[in-house]
Length: 208
Image 1 (tube, rainbow, N blue to C red):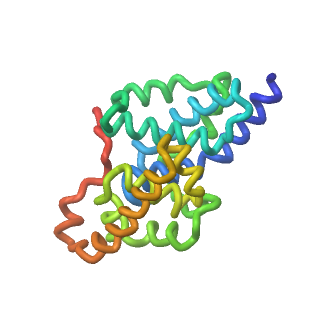
Image 2 (cartoon, rainbow, N blue to C red):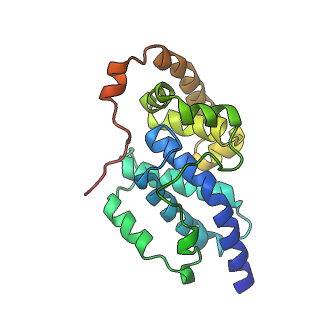
C-alpha cells in the first residue's frame, strides 16, 4: 500500500504543471503566475490523491482535472455548485503535509513561468504567453465555454475525455466547444484597448 502511495504521489507531481497551466488559463486567460489558480490546483491535487489512493482503476489525469473543474465552479458560484471561499481553500492547502501524499515541494509555485510545462499544443500555449488580446478574448467567454476550449485545444483531451472531466455528455461538450470557437475570433476582432482595460483577470470571488 505504501508503494502504491509513493507511485501515486510521483504521478501527481508530474501532472501538476499541466494542472497549473490549465487553472491559470481558466482563471486569468494566460498560463502566467496566478496565486488563486495555484491554490485551486493544490487542493485538486490533494483530492486526487485521497481518491486515487482507494480507486486505482481511475485515470489519474481525468480524476485530477475533474476535481480542478469542480473546485473552479465552486469558487465561481456556478449553478448547482457548492461554494467555498478562497480562504477556506488556502486553509486546506496549508494543512497539507508529506504524510498527506503530495509533498509541499511538489505543490505548484506562484512565481516563475509556465513556458516549460509539458504536453501543451505549442501554437496555443505560445499565443497565450504573448498575446494580451487573446487572453482578454478567452476570458470574455462563459466559464463553461472556456473550460471546454482549454481542455480540448490547450490540454489535448479528446471530446470523450473532456466530457468526463466536466461531467457532461459528449453532445453538450461539443456544443460548448463550438460556441467557444465561434465567439473567440469575434472577441479578438472587437478586442479594443477599452475592452481590455475594463476586463478583470479572474472569474473567482477572491476573499481577503
